[in-house]
Amino acid sequence: MSGRTEAPPVTLRDVTGADVAVFLVQQADPEAARMAAFPIRDRATHFAHWEKILADPTLGKQAIVVGERVAGNVVSFPLGGHRLVGYWLGREFWGQGIATRALAAYLALEPARPLHARVAKANVASCRVLEKGGFRVVGEDCAPGSPGETPVDEWIFRYDDPPAKSRP
Ligand SMILES: CC(C)(COP(=O)(O)OP(=O)(O)OC[C@H]1O[C@@H](n2cnc3c(N)ncnc32)[C@H](O)[C@@H]1OP(=O)(O)O)[C@@H](O)C(=O)NCCC(=O)NCCS
Image (cartoon, rainbow, N blue to C red; front, side, top):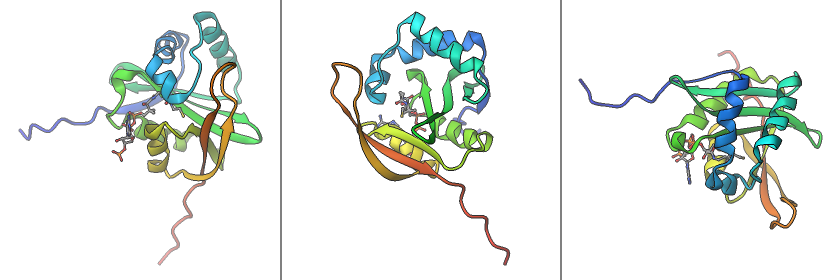
């Protein structure tokens, strides 16, 4: 026996109503909200938000599953003339390469190109996930943030499919 720990398999599947309760807890983690520079939603706002997402076939949404557990979600949505991608993991799943693998899997499911992402500059982990996924920085912005909060300096990332390899 080698003793090496295998990375757990990461799969994506359609989001179910039951997953939304898991996402509620994951988005309410103050450390996650601080990283993402996102306001925590209360229960009613969170369920109303996901009800809209689940009802709209133009919005991309997948649950990230690790083993039997729902580790988080990946979403895509239109904003400001771009199609944006976003993801969120429960804290116990951080630091295991799960977001990197989930994003790679999502790029195979989401056909829109280019895809963009907007990330708080301070969110080094998320910037790294995007870089490893083949996204590159194409701009920056200062988002107003939540009412009463400091504006958020963001990188704007863009993903295009790599050019097809030419035949030798
Ligand atoms: C950001 C987030 C998705 C990263 O998920 P993850 O599964 O831990 O990321 P990975 O394990 O795939 O790591 C990707 C890279 O980021 C690095 N990284 C992970 N956590 C880090 C941290 N806290 N600080 C710096 N780098 C970090 C990893 O080392 C890895 O880079 P490497 O391969 O060069 O070593 C996760 O922390 C999260 O859900 N945070 C809260 C919500 C959020 O910020 N969503 C994104 C909004 S834009």
